[in-house]
Amino acid sequence: MKLRSLLTLLPVVAAGTAWLGAATASAADGFPSKPVKILVGFSPGGSNDVVARLIAPKLAEGLGQQVLIDNRPGAGGNIAASAMLAAPADGHTLLMCTTGTLSIQPHVLKSMPFDPEKDIVPVTQVVNAPYMLLVNASLPVKNVKELVAYAKQKPGEINFASSGTATGGHLAGEMLKSRAGIDIVHVAYKGTGQAMTDLIAGQVSMIFDQPVSSMQYARAGKLRALAVASPRRLAAFPEIPTVAEAGVAEVEPVTWAGICAAKNTPPAVVERLQREIAKVLAQPEIAKRLTADGLEPVGSTPEQFRAFLAADKRKWGRVVKDADVKAE
Image (cartoon, rainbow, N blue to C red; front, side, top):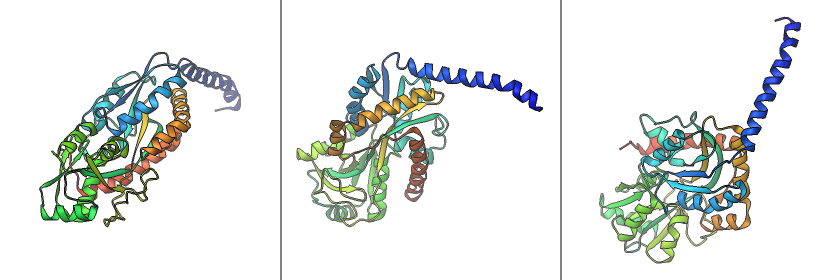
């Protein structure tokens, strides 16, 4: 193309770029124009639900609109994700995305109802969430060593709950099963709340769960916390050893929760959401509450969250392969 032709096109390109920038800015200026909904793929009472409900009121203050929590349990979070993708991609319907939905299930399901990398837009990672190993208070064990010995005496009789097949809690149990050489049976629920009810009632024996949704029951004497499945002890619970300290190595399935949007959500809207959520997580009372519950506030940028997701998916792919987890 001749130089004169290129020069002729420059004003057109500049005008198009200016129009696109104005349209993007306009989308951000008009957002939000109605209440924002955060879809949670698990039942009320679980850790993701608790975190979502904790940040929602402060996020509403920053956005100037109500922020509502809508629980859509089932399919390891895929029902909620599919519901978000069916809504207009304008940032008013968001997903509390999780390790199980985006990092684990793609390695387990033969076909996903959506493409996690193409259909989902990362907004921000909200928290890191180490698991804690808890048992029913009536189980005759006081630590991980005793639990392993007890399970070896009763192969196939001890069961463990999770919030669903191929969730982080499920794989944590599979990791313990493999590393400790014990035969324990997985029982999948549609959410941590239901699993916790049966655990307290003694219908299941143990669970890997985040402290935010379980330590209240341990403090009340209904459950017994045996260990933390993380590289180090949690600052909020320094008396509880790690699984490695308790004698079983390589059981450190730290998970996370974040906020995601649908593809085609205007970038300026995504950036606005990230900024507002990061502000909420930086508030001393919110950070203190999360830390007290054994969670680590993050608030990463969309680019940082995307890079994190890629690495996390590779990590859990190796765990799924080692545990030979299959879709039910």
